[in-house]
Image (spheres, helix red, strand yellow):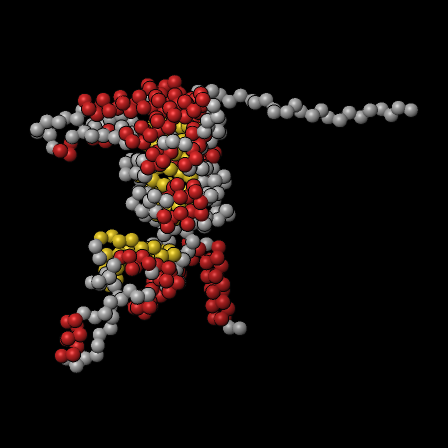
Length: 456
């Protein structure tokens, strides 16, 4: 075997190993070039096979007959731009007259096979312009967030989408959200990512963790208020409703409705107030919401009514006062009682990890994106963290949050503990930060075996 053949064999072997072990590196070195050439060479025939071409116009046919030329071929959407990314390719297409963006969206699976890409998604940018985002490998198998992320106040990155784009949680656009997920589905990691990103911002965190605080209390240094049982949660929610009323009084006092004030400067929420007068925004994180809705006797039923009423008031009125809710749970259905459907109707953002029943998926997406229900119940067990995210517009995407350990989240919260605001209305619920003390063992230690002398 010649030296050239050996070198060629080594290069091929290196490429195969690189594609298997480091798909992102393979894509940036070899894959993006091969994929771009493949798309450009096959583009016309693939579009024709997928039914994404239009016949020639009448004036072209007339011109061909007048000049005795051949009948012109059908035309595919024009490629306006092809742009490589760290995870795939982005094609911007200009549709021909008579074509519709829905036709392109319905053909994404055939385009994926024809162009030999891992995934293809479509979205309409404006009238007649469609963007195809193609991924060259499974970006959700090993989540790596990009180095440059567009962060903004109350807009945080929490996961990676299957098309390679960053999934953001924008509280000013989507004020309230519902997150569902079975045990070991990755719901807790998703919540930790939210807290870790919010910890660095000027925001008050309020937590309700009815699992005796095992999820949220380790992060207590960054929380302005915490509750670890339904009774305390009821009082905390009532205090938040009172705080919301006080914020509205501040807004009313600063509305500045006069003839010489432009419409854009009239205050209608906290973001229209001057920086010196703007109250701090509040994000309420509720873990295991079902524990707040269950009751076993009359006293617990009255407590439940207080809680549900306060939650409905907060989701209906809290946005303008800068109060945003993140409601999490394993199960969220009609059987939780009155007010649950009304509560769900106000939760614009929906995220569903792997769920144990179709009812929970329908409760999450049945009223906004019925086709996302099937995607949610098909999430495999061996891929924790994978979720379906949607909103009231009907759009949805498959996402996966990067793994954040509890220790990493604790370190981040401790680093930004000085940003924790003190709210007078929530002072009784501020977690006590005592120094840890050694805990007693749950069971008495078993004494060591003692050898007894032989008895004659």
